Image (cartoon, rainbow, N blue to C red; front, side, top):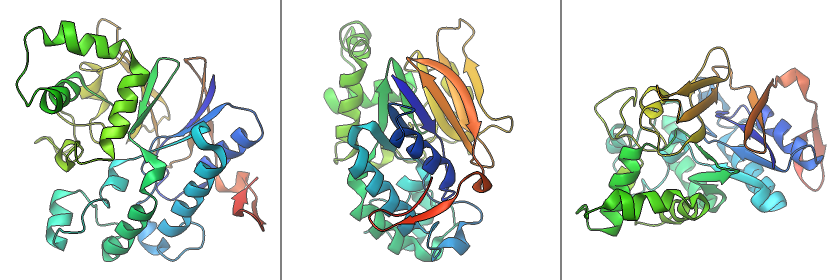
Length: 292
């Protein structure tokens, strides 16, 4: 399968719009967005922007999901997650506990309501041709603790790896489907996806799939091949692997949030940088604005 991958856009919608157009034109079979749809250092001034506001980008994502179904995977990032399930928290608790980074802190409640409305378009991860896609990546440490907690009441059974964990890894689509189902229920309690460690950067294998950094991930990867965003790489795509070269992590986030990646039948291919000037903004009566 030919896949085009778009990492964090933080309301810079153009790269993802380019990927969607590739899908619409039949150039690729699937588009995967790696999360962090909203929040950037400049996004506070975009709250009412007709193209880059949280409302505009969420509506556009929902429209694309309705149009393409399973051909478009919209994963959730830590910034997106920060605005979910916070209705009963005090403002100070929101900023402290859930990681809302202050970019649009005057509109936390309004953005939360938008994510409540469109929560069904998001998933935690995807798997295509043996590659696992998520916002930041899955560590063995996190995944094992999660399975033991949810399936065995937090008591590790004997021969857990041999009879439970390893068989799960042999059927990745089923495991990823389970995590996506759990993610939308109280089974995956909020703290599994919140910032979990004492490392301010998230460089700790105890961190979950919305926060962990590649340096921790490469030596404790739950899967042989993962493609992630979350960590900005100044030179574009950066690849990490452990010393034994058994786990490979491809990170494709950039400070400019302008990179797309092609993956062909499970093989990482070329990247493309997409600038605003590369795309023409057009209005369609049926679909609203889009780039073509």
